[in-house]
Length: 249
Ligand SMILES: C[S@@+](CC[C@H](N)C(=O)[O-])C[C@H]1O[C@@H](n2cnc3c(N)ncnc32)[C@H](O)[C@@H]1O
Image (cartoon, rainbow, N blue to C red; front, side, top):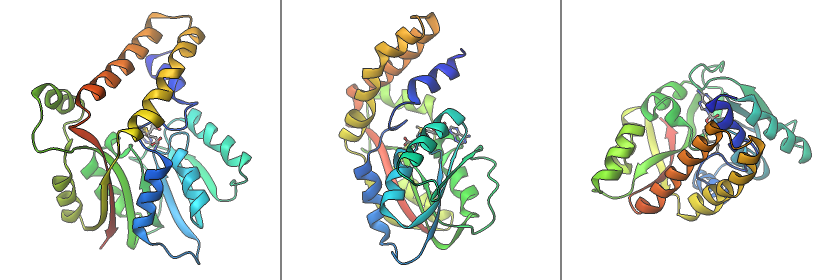
């Protein structure tokens, strides 16, 4: 297995592939104050194994197109969707978020938790706006500084990993400069990193290593994830995922 295949294998059976929780998904949904009487068209981009997709299907009257690059994640979502009898409401699509086959103004809501960074926040805002109806909602979470200054070690780490990391006020400016109006913002609590993402991931390490006979590459994957967790513990007061809910003008 390649390193990427191992990473997918480590993550595919988890509820979520990034920080977040059902509570956060519902909080973002609440901000929208959606009509309950008609079927909404929703795209969930970078859905992973669909933790938030299932929450959306449970709480709104919607047809959801859930997109991801990796079929292993979509298989997990399709299984859950069958168990919960959501197959007529959730359609999965194996595609890159950079190259989506959607028509202009096809959706009432574009949802994306912890995934827009794959093409960059501002690029994603511009590109996905075409697929939203006027007045439709964009609901995205994105790594965000939660203080105005921070230790150099974490500044350098994130600037290397993802140079677009910024404060919420600058991210909101980008939304406004690209034809959106902000309707809500909050950032994820530490529980949404630790309880629903990092702790369940750490609990899978041992079985993952066993499955891959403690190969050098498998150990490298676990070490890299542990280093990310250690970094979070050390600097969790300085960054989080910001949740941005905005309307297309
Ligand atoms: C951090 S995970 C978040 C998954 C899920 N939304 C969640 O919060 O649990 C990012 C997701 O983006 C997907 N992804 C990465 N690059 C992509 C691309 N170019 N197009 C579509 N999905 C992509 C990954 O497979 C992964 O499922």
